[in-house]
Image (cartoon, rainbow, N blue to C red; front, top):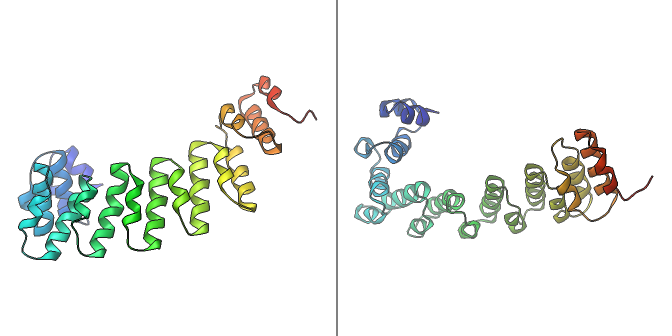
Amino acid sequence: MYECDAISKDDESICSKSGDNDLCLVEFSIEKRDVCEKISNIGIRKACEGLIKGTYTLCEDLETQTRKDICYETFGRYKPDCSACEEIESSYYKDDCFDACTIGTGNYYYCSYLSTEYRRDNCYYNYAIARNTYEPCDEIKLDMLRRLCFENVAVNLRKPIICEFIDGEYEIYCYSKVITLKDVPIENCMEMSPSYTRDQCVMNVVKNTGNITYCENIDDQS
């Protein structure tokens, strides 16, 4: 919120009210004008300068590895540029960097670079929801999160056919959750194979739109 206020009012002093003044100043410098010198953390300050110049090589000038890692992580987060993340030694900062840069780069392959299965799963999930694409869901190992991933993308896109990727009883639950939404297009119902569920999807579209011509798409004559 404070970042937006600072940028919209062209007043970097508003960043001092935020929970993280330094990162707010980074965003301000990217969006408005260079105020990197006001950043207290030297690693973040150097990343800010690098973001203005378009290169993360400035991080190499820092004295300690921790400061370098913070610099690379900040650069990778805001560029976004996952190649900067590869320069980080600490798994803590490297994970944060890849997690942050993945969505921005539009390549969920980078989720595989995270150090634990838990973080990789969450990276794939967050990417899928942010980009409204179900392909990353298939990479998730934890069954519950994998199911929720497909289900939420199906709901967001109003595409019940995505529920086919869910096994067992949860597939039916996913279908019922999607087809009962009020704005599912008839085209999305017709993507499904002929079935009772597709007929119910069409019936709900008829109820919500009042267009009875769609009834001809129902297989069950009764």
